[in-house]
Length: 438
Image 1 (cartoon, rainbow, N blue to C red):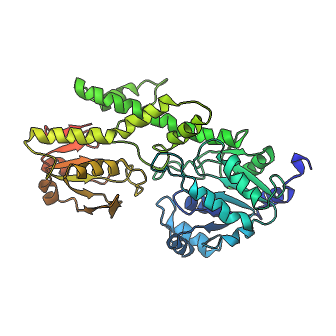
Image 2: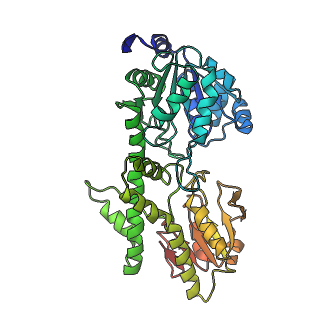
Image 3: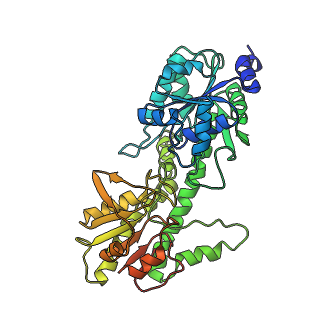
């Protein structure tokens, strides 16, 4: 059977809109993806091992800020979106996207457990010609070396009854300008035929699809996107430390440099990297590179610079308190913002976690205020979430801004705080000797 003859039944279903779509993992990536599929008129079955998520989704309740609640409720009521913990229903699906976390283990090596279990959960139930795409960020070769073999071991034949591709998620939580539907989608197949069918699949509900030659190329593309950001953020994080010694405002330097209309893209310093991708992706490539006797020194150095920013922030705060004849131990520190970026509730890999851990190690009395994150409980530490009142601000020996949420009244903070350490330039329009800037 020639390449063009395989998957004809699946191709026809994708083309005429009768295909049933599946999404494994109903989190920050999966739920917006399922809703976007449904918005294009497709029937979608969402799978997750979390009974809490499935119950909420099945009831039409969106728990992801980027998924419009009213739209999602309507999609569920119309039967376009269903949610289940029953993976045997994968038999109903013609195309399934796997959107599960791919974290690092304690040694900062890739942990593909969720991806492996997700693939194994659907593998025995696939029926007829089925496309399986992986969207979880990972190292080059994962789709071909892990996902495809699990499916073939379950009795399926690649390019006969199962087709496998990789298409990296590009979700940017809280971005008002770009969403799942209008963000270009890179797609690469384990085989040429798988790639072509995956392009048809994503074209059926997304605005722009960008085909690449292989799944490996698509996997590397995603890593390049985030390593690019990681390396450039590391550059400004290193320079901000030099600028502090030279008494130069790094934020002013970046803003002036970005007036050049070509050859420069602005990146800003901060207390560390956050989100699921940027702090993790470089280590995926570094790990895989060792298989080829190659050491990604440049990338690993950038990772170290960014990781060390939480220590730098703690040391700067300690030094600032010392000038006021105070020790960090016993001082009350009010942290403003614990989400990994402004105006979202996502705490994945938030630099605030590391900074707070360091503050607690130095025996500081830490409380926080974050309008998007009602509960803070990480690494065995549960920190009190306090209202941003004059009394709380005045009670604190220091206020540390780790996330610049726009609804925070920074003028009120400046007026009543004894000491403010602004790591996000949130108080750029405010002045005072009590304001310390990164």
